[in-house]
Length: 126
Image (tube, rainbow, N blue to C red; front, side, top):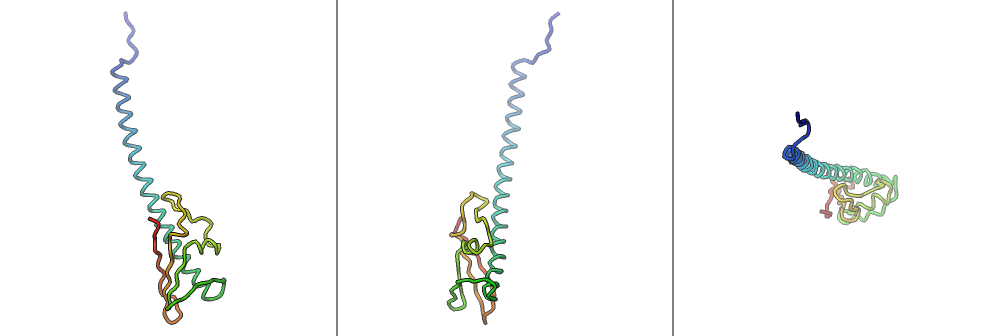
């Protein structure tokens, strides 16, 4: 009587092919998910910069903090790095690629009758 309790070479190769396909599918989906999450995190970062910029300008106008904003025709602008220097952010690295966005993002402020009316973030990073 012959004992045939092992797997044949064809069965082992078939199993490896199936496992390889599963791994390829899982890796491709997780790569897409990471990309989507990085984009979402970058949008959240820009939104935080927008909100902090509003607070920064309000504090400057109320003379709570010292600022060197130069107003020309009720407009002012500065690099986002100024917010880091003022202590509002510890890190301005993009979640997409780790690049520092402090010098490539610009905050523009527009006001009428000495009241801030709008903050715009100009993204020159990507």
